[in-house]
Amino acid sequence: MRIQKRSIAIILALTLAVFMVQGCATVQENHNQIVAGGYKTLATAATTYESAFGALADLYKAGLISDDVKNKAVEYGTHFWSAYHTAVELLASYAKTSSAEDEARLNTAVIEVSKLLGVFLEYAGPYLAKK
Image (cartoon, rainbow, N blue to C red; front, side, top):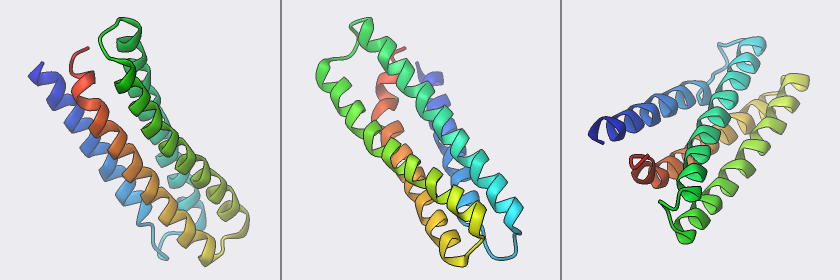
């Protein structure tokens, strides 16, 4: 069980590190690098979330977590998905325009996705350690 908790903590730390590096993309990076990095970052976020949420769903089906826990996870997940889809839209916009304004909005959105994924994983972590 300690190994699982440590694994979750390591995954969370690595995921957040990737987000922060990608979220802080600066002017010295060219447009294509920012777009490619944005897509990779958001894909990683979605995969991480889907894996954790799927594991929680399995725990719920097995009767190992309550309705309250499930509902709170859904609440955090809803916030994450909303931010994620906003970031995806901003990435698509930046890919077309390359404007500094869109880049700034994209960076802010990716940081928000990172924060909300972190909140979700922090909440889910103790329950996932049961799996």
